[in-house]
Length: 101
Image 1 (cartoon, rainbow, N blue to C red):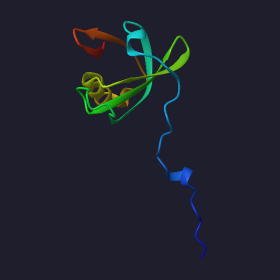
Image 2 (tube, rainbow, N blue to C red):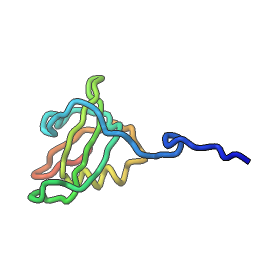
Image 3 (cartoon, one colour):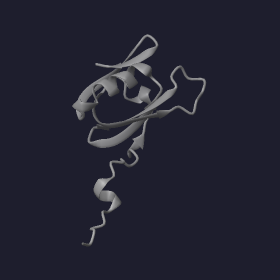
């Protein structure tokens, strides 16, 4: 009995890099965006408050973009509500931290 070989792409759950124009988080504050993906990884910046780096992929005005942040509040919110993606939100800056609203 001959065994059928599988292709890596048939079973791999790896996601590719998040593509889009890179923006700064301050460029999109108080604007409605549609979150379409995210990734977290260990931060390469030891000086930041968070040991994680969050990449958020979103659409704004029909264009795809990404932002990078070490915001622990945004990281917690993305992990908690990842099953709701895609969703519309606005990133607000309250005192010294960012949050979805």
